[in-house]
Structure formats: structure tokens, C-alpha cells
Figure 1 (cartoon, one colour):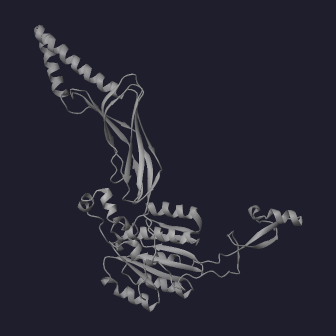
Figure 2: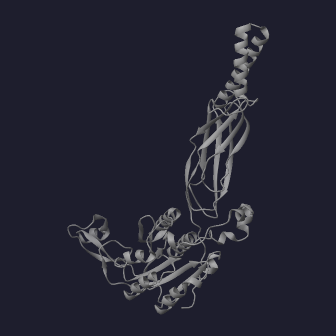
Figure 3: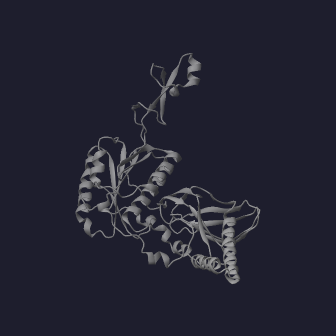
Length: 420
């Protein structure tokens, strides 16, 4: 795509010299006509050969990163032609915040390449696109300036931050479990209760081959329900309940990336209730899954999303992938989410409700869970507690433990129980 520069003026002069040359035949106009023609041809050839055989590639060290961690990638501009490339400007159109990968390249030798690495401190969770890339070239006189797009794109997922929770100690009775539940499960669990003879319709995956070989007939494994309580994280993503406006641009720009995190702000999510909720949920998921608890998540965003309780690294990755992209886009109050799951949770469960809502409706929903023998606790995220007097009174009356996290607090120190 041609840009301004001196080309329009040169074309006007070229046309004038051509007109006068044809009308007068004077040698001076013929000289200028040939001169301007040569300049245009030279500029066009210069720019054309700068793109001839040019390739742009980018390689991610990992397609996943985390808020507070560094994302590293490498870009390569390769010259496949036998002519050198002189003065190339590489512009990157990535949408990852604070990502700067552009470069001005003085020269690339024939059949050579120019490569550089880019390190970006991730400040925001989500899915982002690195690229595409636009290469700009111009002739030495600046007569012709051309941009060419290269589809050097990569997708990257930035997980929410995960904080240690040294002060998050659940009191007795909040997290039941530990005693064997003497109830057969119709599905496979990690708790094998014994074996029995195979019945038609049993899954072949449940056959216990060593026992079958020993007794001479097919035997299948029987399972018991998990003796430890399932942990459910209910996250309030009702857009009408959210508070906070994020970091002011001036605050971020006044601190370079290294200073920004060195001052301890890496222990604070972006000061909105949405980002605090997601960061706390990710930290709790890490905390409980390390303790080998089965953990599930339920939220209303644009639609209802539920991750059924599971254990292990695979579940942790599923949680992070989910929390990386979910947004506060719900128009439903938090109590509706709680009510929608009121009959699907097992009695041997614990609910952790994470919310900025000032409505007492969600507290009443938690109390209904308690009547069914399901433990509950609340994490309230807000600027101040002044608007939560009714909520706190209802929590105390229902004997539901709660934690208050103020926007701007460091998560590890803020995650400790208040007095009920």
C-alpha cells in the first residue's frame, strides 16, 4: 500500500516534463522526463526487492503464561533472496497488554536472517493474539513507502495469578470428611470397595483382570463414594454487583514493569471485584487441589458454567483455562446461581461463595444449603464494609464463617477469617 512521501509531487513533475517534452521536444524536458522516470523505477524496484523472498516467523516458548509471570517469544525475519534487505520496520499488532515486539532492522544479508526475543510481563488474564505483523519498507529517498502484512500469529492464554494462602485455615466443621462413606457409587471413583462377579452391562474398564484370572470368571471392581468432602467454588459474576475501576493508567505508566512488581503489587490483583474474585478462586483451587481434595466451580457468565469436582493436575489446568477467560457478564443475581445447584450437591460438600454482592438473598441461599448438611463459608470482596451490615448480620445469625477482602489488599494476608 503506497503512502504519502514525495511520490505524488514526483508524479506531477513527471507528467509535466512528459507534456512539455511531447509539445516542445526540448532536450531539457527530455532530460527531466528520463530522470523522473528513472527515480520512480529505482524506488519501485528498491521497495519490491525488499519484500521479495521475505518471511516473518514467531515462536512462543510456551502458549500459556500467568499474570505476574514473563511471556517469552522469538521473532525471525528471514531473507530467502540473493539480494540484501535494507531498512525494514517491523510493526507488531498483538493485543496482549504492554507487549512491544516492533523492531527497525538496518539490513539483512542475502539468504540471511534477523532474530530477536521479546519478553513481556503479563498484567492481565485472558486469551490474546500475538500478531499479525506488518513490515514497512521505503526507498532511500522516501518516495515510495509500502506496508505488507504477514500472518505471523500465535494464540496465548494468560492464567490468573495464584497466591499462597498461609493464613487460610478452615475451622473444624467447615470442611467435613475423612470418614469412609459406606455407600456404593454407580460410577468409578478413586476408592475401590472390593470386587464382585461380572453382570451383563458392566463396563469392561471395571474388570479386575488379576482376580478374574485367579478365580476363573470375570470379576469387576466396586467403588465407594469419596470419603472427603467436595469443595465447590461459587463465583459471583453478576455485572451489576461488581465494583472497582482497575489501575489508573497514570499509576501503571509511572512505574516500569520491574518497579511495578518489585514494590509488592504482584500480590494484589487489579483492583476490581471481578479480578479479585478470579484470583482468589484460582488461589483456592491451587490450595485445595494440592491437599488432594476434589474441587468444582460454578458461575453465571453469559451462560451457566459448571466444572464438576475432580482431583489432580488435570482438573487444575481445566480450572485455570476456565478462569482465564470467564468474565462478569451475567445479568442474574448470585442467589440464582446458588439456588440452581441446590439439589445437585452431595451432602458431603463444602461451598465457598465469592461475591461482592450487598444482597442478603445469597446468604439465605447458603443457609438453605446448611440445612441440608452442606458446609458453607463466604468471601466478600469490596471497597468498604459499610454497605454490608445486613449481610454480616445474616451471616452471623446463620453461623456462616466469612472473610472480607478489601480492594487493594494483598491476597495472602487478607485471606483470613473474620469473627462470626
